[in-house]
Image (cartoon, rainbow, N blue to C red):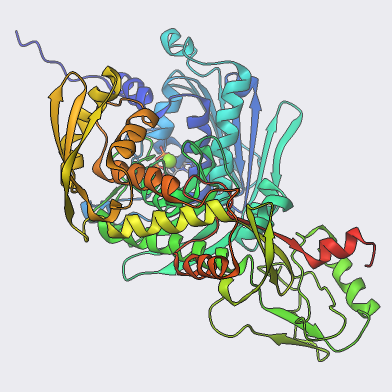
Length: 597
Ligand code: ADP
Ligand code: MG
């Protein structure tokens, strides 16, 4: 007698449910994705007890015929793919044909559905995978699926469900991601009698983000729009100041599918590089659209992960898109083109138009006439302009003044030094304070990072001896190969002693022993540290060490040189430790303080 048996469909569905239905949030995701695939315009989700007692998704999509409604509950039954070729080019959210039967196998499910043209609809009740009733009913066009008592027949799984608050939080997070991906749809999430989310149909991602996260956040975001040969990358990304403590602030989508993908996440974070302090995350809503043949979505049962067929091809585009967005935003944030009004004072009509457009709540970016002109007239100007708001300069009395050439700190007038720590410069629209130490650190850091590898290694004569406590010595011993590849020649002598024979030429102005010591002290003794991280840490340490300190008086020439060097750095908004590097007080703020507006 053989030992191998073919499992029943019922058992297969329960097994599949183990993967597909982790928790109520997964039920919401699968049902909502089906609604999106069915062409729904309005999607409403109702919950009881964090989805443990009830999840109901109601849509106004294409609905199902009585035959299809029954088939939909069968394993591997789908209307979305038919052939192996289809699997290579998936355009729908679903395709595996296993969500409905899996959910039905571990809950009490009720499906009510009607096609638009049909006179009546169908109601099917399933309990733990067994169909209890099928009947003809009167109902609105579209589909409503109710999932009660999730895992009622799988006690082991029910035990893993968390508190109502936790499960609701998971659902809310999933709901937000799906709603961000489909701004043109109406979305509602109701928990018992409380409306948790209610997002009206939007015409753009920006509007949806505005509804989801509020005006303050939405207006600080930087638009990204980048097209490579193989991918379109677009979205809204936060400036580095908008720091978050965890990666839940990353909303990443591939072909409109919310994903948690390590490679993609890494590509996105690389763009913020040294702009963010370690352990913090940016706010990013990013859509990567690639031809379906270049991405495999069939690698994870809940389709949370994707596999790019040629990762560098796509990820390089992502990195470039992010870098471009960030770079332009950094420059724009302190030298915006400004607008000159020929009338003075500001016409009341303009002020009224602004308040109608809700501009009084906009950030205090002001624009003003150049210093040479009399009467600077501030006109708040959001960037990007909200839709429907006329661009400044479009009316006759306002004309744009474009700054010539790329914006540059060194083109601004230096007013002096404050407290031996800050350089004061005059910007077209205010006063900029530059943290001299942070600025210099950024400059040195960039120089070092570009210099590594290219500048070679330099012998030390005589060699330098270094003695370290056990833990630090242990760390350095582990880093030896990486340090060597960067141009160090360090010989361990045992007992925490090392002899440094050579160091990378770019670091020649630093004391090698002090550098290695500080590196070892400031870095937890990790098992392995990637070469590039080590390079960054070295550059940080060396840059901080070599930089002008706060408390050092600088003459005009030194300040001018610092600003010139700063202009030459790639991203000059924050120091390598993520601290802000400069701060602008706008004329508008000054005028408001003096009650001149
Ligand atoms: P998949 O989405 O992978 O095709 P599902 O088990 O989630 O598999 O759904 C099976 C089928 O049921 C779908 O292919 C679709 O034809 C139909 N279906 C499910 N939900 C809906 C809905 N809300 N509206 C219309 N059709 C639906
Ligand atoms: Mg589905």
